Length: 381
Image 1 (cartoon, rainbow, N blue to C red):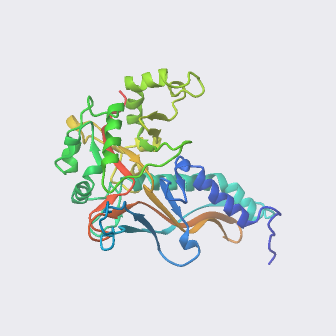
Image 2: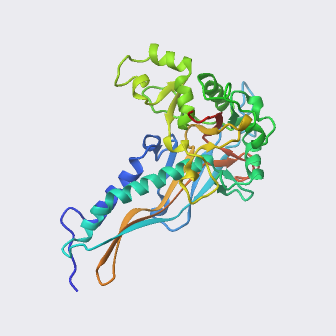
Image 3: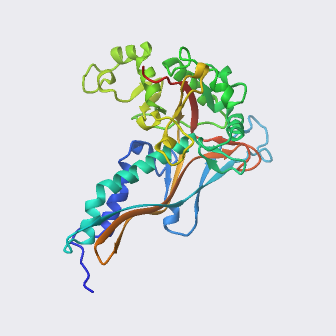
């Protein structure tokens, strides 16, 4: 049987490396991920070099204790409180089948022909998994589960452990019940929309949270920044806040190509970069087979039956992304050579990093780099 030789310069290894790079870096969250602990999405590829089904991420908490003056330090040393979380990986695959291809076409040609669709699927799947991870909560076993499939008891337990890093609307008191459904019912479309004042309150709460939520640095200089991933309805309300409108008009460059009054680009307020995530504008449903699983809108769960939206104020190591096998291409020929398939597959996982604040790594899990906001998010009339 004759074999087709790949064209020079288009070997599968080179193609796969480029494919992986594009799918990971050319997505909406690309500027917020990296391999160091300052990244919002902390990436690891430990399992590409050894077997296993999970990658461990570590967090080292701030030191306490210390002595002053002539106090003896020996015997008064501080404990280095380090915690860990395992991110599980699993295979992800997709493929397309093509017929009536000229026998002269090589496998590389098939890959190139299917490349746009498979690349978009891989990028969208990665993005959807990021959004789903931001909303996830731990179950009784400490395993992260999606908000849409979590029980009311699991959501409430998450709120109890993360009370200092969750904000309902415009007032801390809205969440004192420690019951998620009750907190959502306090939100109305007057005071509890995303605004400059609400965002500043959330930032102050995030700064006061213990264990600490560490900001990250994305701009030049020594300034510390948080990032807010906002659903489109909340981004709309925030951009229309008179305080924000005036800030963009008076404090930013008056340029039609750069001022967000004209471009609709990211907004900046009080040390927070506000980034709109369009896919978070979809209604969140309990049907995991639909794209609604990615959404960030809780339909009819606010006061008077209004919609409520997720927004996420994030710092360093908010999420952990782990790869056991990089994204690579695969091919298949069947039906007497009439049907040619090309696919992609990878083994990876991405989860919100949560470390125990109790006696063990899984006791009283708290969000390491995520501060969750619930805001009124009424649909456009």
